[in-house]
Length: 245
Ligand code: PGA
Image 1 (cartoon, rainbow, N blue to C red):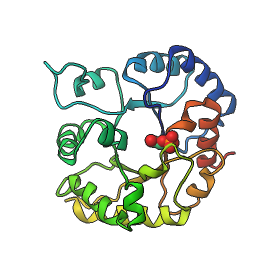
Image 2: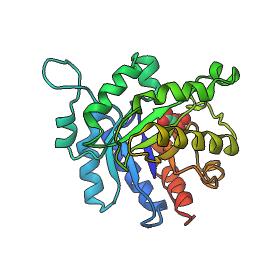
Image 3: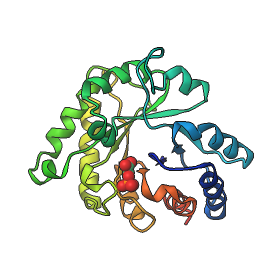
């Protein structure tokens, strides 16, 4: 599973260019779920262009709001479904840090969307927490939002250390593997149906380092920011994941 998080980037021209570059490089394979989370405003343009180019890429949103009505600037579940989005990212560290999203907000969002959309829940420790060896403790706190839930098989976690996002730094593949194993164990023991979720790694993934992460047993894919903005780079990473590079 390889998902592009375009964050607050993109334009109609960029989407056209992205699709032609993706097609140049992508080797067709049925191996993986490929997703893009564009800005809300570009969803329709992206979906029309994916369809026109017969690309089997799914799309979703980077966040979702709790309800509809008098909530200026918000986007509701009904709107997201109306645009045929398949998934929502929630709890991205930029939402937590810039927009003050809390575990409580994330838990309310899970109540709302967990049964209706594929969910990609982002968790990750800060640089300071990492240095202080608090990574597991912090991840466990962030995972409290899934306690006692009956989650679907499409529920996915993205492990994204905050210090690795957009910095060019990453944990070692081995460290990532150990953390992913830990996350799977925590989710399995905290959910009522004991699901073992897919766990994606996110944070400075690019075409040069992707293979080293995908070699690890507990890495089920990647959530990619910067390197996903170029259709060639993103396609290269998908090809690496599919073993067709
Ligand atoms: P990055 O971002 O790939 O640019 O580090 C990843 C993310 O924030 O999801």
